[in-house]
Image: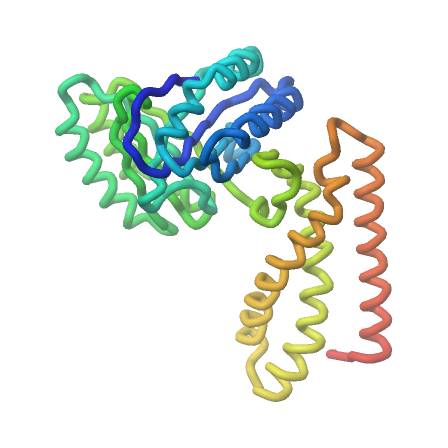
Length: 327
C-alpha cells in the first residue's frame, strides 16, 4: 500500500482497492476486521465501508474510509499501526494495492450501483495533452447508456502519483458496454502516446446498505445470506401490498391498470424493505456475521430462514383460499 504525505485540507475518503489470493480470502477478512477496528479509533474518523469481491465483475476488495479532514486521513495512512498491519497483509495479496484520497466535497465518491476506478500514470511533461484527451473521453462516456456521473482527480503530491477517474453507471451491464466499446478503445489507443500505465478496477454494490451489522467497518455478510433475508422480507411485503392495497384500492377503487398499479406496488415495496431488511438483519446478526467460520451456525440460520419461508407459504396459501380470491 502507498504511503502518503501532505494533502489539501478538506474531508476525504481513502479509497483502497486490493486483490487477494483466492486461498487467503478468509484470512484477509479476519485481517480486515483488525484494521477496521484500528481505523475506527482514529481522530475525526467518520465511517468505513467494506465491499468484498463479487466475481466475475468485481475481483477486488474495495475499502472506503471517510475522515472529516484530509490531515486525519494522511495521519492514518502514515501511522505506525497501519504500516504494521499493511505489512502483515502483504503475503495475502496479489499485485499492488491502489490507495487514493478523494475529496468528499465533490460528487462521485463511491459507492454507486456500478463504478470503475481508473488510475493513469502520465509521462513527464504530458499533462496538458492528457487533460485535452480527458475532456474528449469525458464527453464520449457521458453519451453512453446508463451513465450517472464522472469524477476526475489530478495527482496529489506525496499522496498519489496517478490521475484518478471514477465512473458511475446505473448497472454493471451498462458499465461493461462502455468499457468494452469501440469508441473507448479508440480513445485509449490515442492516449498511449502520453501514458506510462493505465488500469481500471470495477466496483459493484448490491444489498449491502441494508446490512449494516457488526462493528465499524466490518465486511458485509455473504451475498447468499443477504439474498435469503431479502427474499424473506420481500415475499410477504409483496403479497400483502397486492392483497391489501393493489387489488382493493388501486385496481378496485381507482380503476388503475395492472401495469401501473404494479409500479406503485414496487415503489412501496422498496420503501418498506429499506426499513424491514435492516431490522431483520440486526436480529439475525448471529447468523449473518458469526465470529469466525461456523458451519453449524450457518446451517442453523439457513434452516431457520427456510422454515420461515415455509410458514409464509402456508399462511398466505390459507389466506388466499379462505379470504382473498384474486383470480
